[in-house]
Structure formats: structure tokens, C-alpha cells
Length: 192
Length: 93
Image (cartoon, rainbow over all chains, first blue to last red; front, top):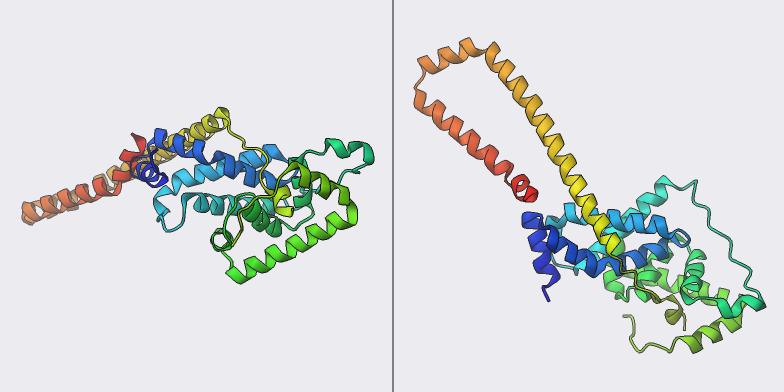
């Protein structure tokens, strides 16, 4: 398999569309998932922003120095796109209320929908770091590079966000936790 | 437990997304080429008009001065412009 670095070099040097297509195919899942979590209830807008992320990446490919992984660089572009979107649409963004998770609906709760609802509880920047940690599986150091914040600030933000979500889970419905626990066996990997 | 809930549960992987991105890239390049062409034509027009306006002075300069330095300067300018726009040629390919 051709490495990201080799493909990126071909894109930067000659605007190679085939190389860029391979890169988009390789990274679309991560970037679209990230955007979908950040945008919470608007998958279409999330995909539009993901597309803009790749367009910017194509334009600026020559500026990727290779000191960080390409995926880290792409996530940092995506994060900036999200912040820009938020600034422009601050007044229009209305977070949907949490659905009433009644007894009858509990069985139907999809894990992804649940994750998005949890994201909706958080401030956008908390959402971003927590998704990078638990969705994208990045280390705290990588997250600090993506959001361009000091490592300590990132760790504190993740800690605060986790506390908030755990509290919400405890306050609202303990059975959701139990159900999800059974559905998804615990991963072994740890986040630095 | 929370990390299990927050991990990605699906992986969007669709060809139409990739096609959309590549179409966007092509559109961007078309617009960029159009802007370069329009500004190039406008610049060349102004340049030609300017040359006509100062053609007498230029004529005097070329006849009075040695032709060699002027030719070298002209070739240097062409080489510089070619170097400057080299990436555009590559990106269009």
C-alpha cells in the first residue's frame, strides 16, 4: 500500500487527482465521523464540511510538513472548518432537545444516536476533544496539535467533559449504561 | 464504559462522497485558471497600452543604449515568470 506521505507528495507536486482520490477514500471515514459528531444533529452539513476539509487539504497539501500524521493534519483542518461554521451560523444553530428516552424506546436506542446525544450535551470545544480521544482514538498530544491548545488544557477539558457525561448518565438513566455495556465489550486500548 | 459509547459505531465509506470531493477540486482548478487567464489578459492589455504610450521613449532607449543588456534583462524576466507560474502548469496536468 502506498503511504500517505508518498500520495501527499504526488498531490503537492503535480496535483495528482488519482493520488488524492486514494487519500480521500482512506480518510473519509474518520473525517466524516468526526464532523458528524461535532455537528451532532446535521449529517448533511457535516458531510459538506468534510468535503470542504478535503478541498482545503488539496489546496494546501504542500504545506503539510509530515511532522504530524496526515490524519492529524486533516482533523485540524476539519476542526477549523467547524469553528468557522459555528461562527457564521451561531444564531441559526439550535441544539435539539434530548428525546424522551421512555421505557418503550430503550431497546431501540442505537449506539451512534446515543453518542450524538451525549455530544449534544457538551460545549463544541469539549465535543471536539472528546471525539478525538474516544472516536478517532488519538493521544492527548495529537489532540493538542489538532486543536492547537496546550497539553494540560486538553487533558483538563477531556476530564471535565467526561465528568459531565458520566453525571448525566447517572442522573438520567442507569439502564442505558448497562445496556450499552453489554452491547459493546470493553476495549483494551488506553488513551495516553 | 463511556469510551465504548463514544467510539465511532459506523464508518461512512461512499464513492459519491469521493466523487463530490474530486469534482470540487476540478471546479476549484477551473475557477483558478479562469482568474489567472482573465487577470493575465487584462494585465497584458494594460501592458501593451503602456508600451504604446511610451514606445517613443523605449525606441530611444534601445537605439541609444547597448541592445545586449536589454535583451538579457528581457530573457531574465521571461525566465522569472516561467519559474513563478511553474506550479500552475503542474497543477493543471
